[in-house]
Image (tube, rainbow over all chains, first blue to last red; front, side, top):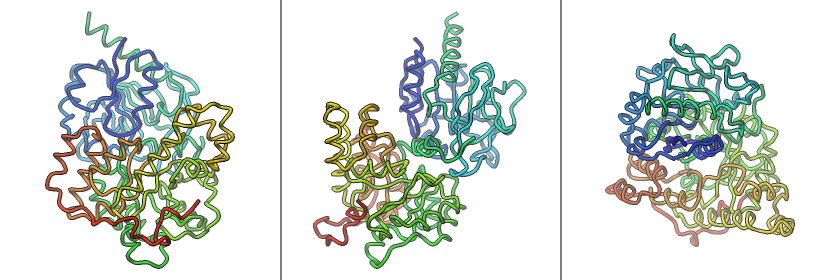
Amino acid sequence: MVKIGVLGLQGAIREHIWAIEASGAEGVIVKRPEQLNEIDGLIIPGGESTAIRRLIDKYRFMDGLKKFAADGKPMFGTCAGLILLANDLVGYDEPHIGVMDVKVERNSFGRQRESFEADIDISGVADNFSAVFIRAPHIVEAGENVEVLAKHNNRIVAARDGQFLGCSFHPELTDDYRFMNYFVKMVEQSKRKNFA
Amino acid sequence: MKAGTERVKRGMAEMQKGGVIMDVVNAEQAKIAEDAGAVAVMALERVPSDIRAAGGVARMADPKIVEEVMNAVTIPVMAKTRIGHIVEARMLEAMGVDYIDESEVLTPADEEYHLFKKDYTVPFVCGCRDLGEATRRIGEGASMLRTKGEPGTGNIVEAVRHIRKVNAQVRKVVAMDIDELMTEAKLLGAPYELLLEIKELGRLPVVNFAAGGIATPADAALMMQLGADGVFVGSGIFKSDNPAKFAKAIVEATTHYQDYELIANISKGLGIPMKGMEISSLAPEARMQDRGW
């Protein structure tokens, strides 16, 4: 069984743990950088990206997160997590972790009153997936090796860049675990490859 | 595509979990809060301790202050409406505020009825002292709860009482025989269907923060330890000696609420917290927690 961590600084943490466990993997809440050594894949949850970023700096997570990415281990960012993974942010000089080759715009669908849910198709993962968008970002530009997995109103809302998976919406807020199953498979494949 | 669904409104509160929501009265304070790692700010005309001191009728903040705060930060902005004041609430919704607090900190507009919150696209947070009050608010459509405590006192005792009570009552409902549930609903004044849902889920169906009296990092960590999903800090930050430092320390203590060495370290030399008040010194009409039902 693979072990998947959820960055446990702030946000919807326990919902991801439930989804990981329902998908047949072991879920661990990661509160300290040294825990990154014990896991095969990492989820950066939805929450407030500015608050999570501050806590990443405060607890010296940044080097560990960059090394985790450099080691080729899978990472999945949902909403705020996507913002933290992106290597380019509209309106900002510097990205956060900056490992996924996408340009992301924050709060790009508007404020809370414009937040919504919609059924979308995630290519190769799930049709009619009920996606919950909350003050959501979207991917403005995807690098050439990035596979676009889903669009809503012509905006990219889910994508995969090799070991990195990101989406604008919150799969953890529903009990549809198909997207999480897809990530668990990514982690299983990556672990097998590292053993081979 | 649907906006303002229950999942979208409750989900917004889920994203705030483990975080600190700070009261601010202007753009400058909002920026300090955002830099300190607040997950949202509550835009107000005065913090609760100043509302107490000023006396008179406390109303929704001047929309100009709310707008100034909305323009200053990228994190969500909440604002307070008087209990039952449909028009204040609709004004805040029209302005695009991210969450409305139907709050006992302001003077109630209606002493009998709370807002019917299911009608709004914007989500609401409401105060509670026990599970009956909590479920009545959820029944009206609140997407998030906060225990009331006693706002503006810097005294944690009421906040402790309320979070303990709500969580003890949740545990009781979860453990009780289903035959006993209707009588429990009657005794609590709680909608039966919501108690049934709590029993099935094993928890409240919405996020529950703690509020009303949190003045130090240790206070914030205490509320987390007692089972709060996050904390609201009102007067505790901007009435302290060093707001930026207090704000950061409270955020860290909330994240790492079981790391006592860390909380001790960040509490060193913080300066003087807001001056507190003994609850028994409050006249009955000065008790904000008794507003609403």
